[in-house]
Length: 334
Image (tube, rainbow, N blue to C red; front, top):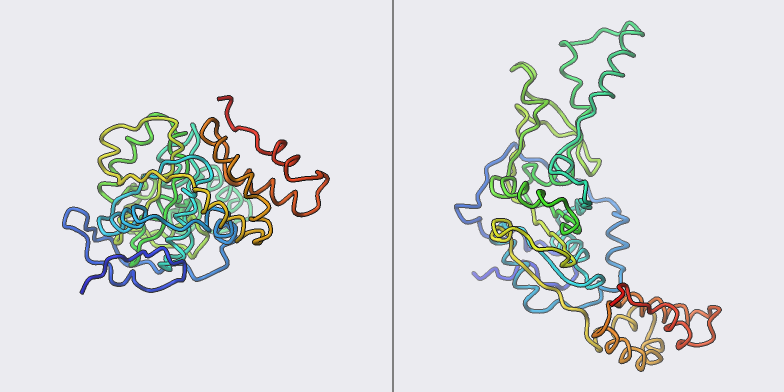
């Protein structure tokens, strides 16, 4: 039976992820014991993301093919494109449709390190707690090793690599803003699907199982001997605005998708879906002007949507022409 595609881009949640074939031998992982997906809760970030303008864009055939290839091959998906094309939103669309739980988001800056994504250990907090116990005369059990898990919190990447039965969705946002070493530092984690928590791996054998906190605030999970290994490799989406090149070794381990900006019909559909058909008809001339301007300078669809919204909601500006001239400024000097 043909199971392709798993992700269909239809938006409505379904259980086709259970039909995902086993991974190829070189991408199979055997972490355990299994960790349950977090309970369904209202993900306010997902609600906001899925209400964003780019959510209304219909996925291209290439986009569907590459998302499914990443799911089948258990490989990260590197998405490049202009701001506002829906790079980040794609992660939320996949998580919603395939019912993979809340998206684990890891925003990257120039100071971000691999350790930030894996876990954080708070030795100062642990020392403070120990001192408070001593002041209160509270007995410290097992030489205080059993409480260390309260001061370890897994990061988004570290949580995504827990041994879930279904893959979690991990969004590594704006990887092109990272320090030059981060893409290379990610290689081993992506290849092996595991990592070690140094502070736990040094504990004595009798304290080898330690419950630690997760990035999504769920119930603590047990980590044995300080090692975390995935069962289902996460669906990893890395976004880039194309501001830098990446090492060949990093690119070799990713599938790559270049998202194109929406065309005139798609922009009209976005405006109609968000603001109504009257707004879309009123903006037709400005959509044409916007597309011409986009060829010369960096402007985004949400800028045009903002202008149409202000004009249609009876703002201070007297006409859509006035608002567009004010709000549709290029994002760059070119």
